[in-house]
Image (cartoon, rainbow, N blue to C red; front, side):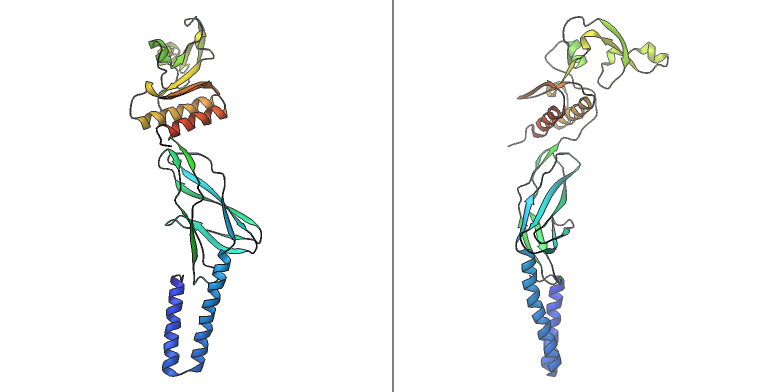
Length: 286
């Protein structure tokens, strides 16, 4: 259909035709009909530029709430070139690409990730105004894309493991073996270490924050427990997300407990992704 420019072009043709009729000017007739023929030729070229274009969804990585979800789209030409093809989600500005004959181009579109879970984008607008901009051909496309959105990490105290004694709850760990009181020395304080084990005398001597290290805590596995945290569910998930990232960065084994889900203590990229996925999809309808 005509674009705004095309509408103005059509109105100008109508005025030129009226002037040609009024003044019976053959030159005005000729110019009017020539421009009208150009308009018809533009229809054919605009349609041809849009036909034979293939769109495929690319791989999209997970993001956190508050970030921009990235959706990769690949445009492929079956035969001829496609010029000035624009795509995106209005009212945001569309991206424009040129696709060579039997070639392909890839672009990345973004949407804000406002809530955790699966983000399914709306139908995408694909349009072409080639060659003169007076006509626009468009289509709404659903590529069935989805991006997994993790909770926004929320810094805070290490969640405590539930189901053990008070001392273990305060440590947020499962003690392994006996000898919980076997003193091993002092080590630098790390976020999540129990404040009960802070060595205040060393701190008063200007040695910084140190904590007492005990044998039973060496090589410990931390359990991040949803039920051991107060507050609303989203705040709990955000705190657990923060500590999954922190413990993964330290290369320390940890487990995750959610109502109905338990991931055994482990470490590594696969374990981190499994925990983040469980947090993202907790309570989300399939």
